[in-house]
Length: 262
Image (cartoon, rainbow, N blue to C red; front, side, top):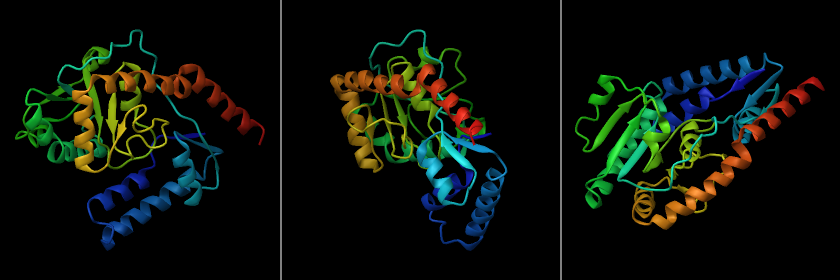
């Protein structure tokens, strides 16, 4: 059994589109080779488990003939969930060693962050995760950005913040969203960031892809505590139903039983 946490050729395809390289012959040839190798590798297993149904359907359509079932993963339930509060802090969770994270932070700091600072100059943008000095240097001209690195207590670091998930490429599920919800942090995401995770725009969180829409919705979260409180409560309902330890164990056990019956 192979657990496909992120389809590499899908990430590459999204990256090519985002950087207008989809017509570049060399880039397309490299992408086609990566896709063929990954599909062939998946077909060597008895079963492939993806983290969401969208990835499962994509792989079926792309030639993976091995049995594919979706089986999300989650995070350990927090011993204590923070109270819903906001203390002028936005947070991005993700290491700099993963290209989609770098892409996300660059997009956010160049298209969204300046507008947020113009209205709320005391806001800080914190990045949790390991980022090399050379990567941090690329953001040296960005105001109020803080690279926290590894933190001993993620719950404490998230307290009083809004999580931003401006992911432009990737597959699987965003553990950064589950961490945020688990610890009581309302979040805003792009469509790709929250793809097929069960969270709905305007009910559990905000979802936006256009920079101006992302700015407008983020400002609402910053300025309207009632919106944060609604997202705080509703997102936890989704988390409990779909990502609790009990729900995940039950689904994964069912996957294994289906394989044994084949």
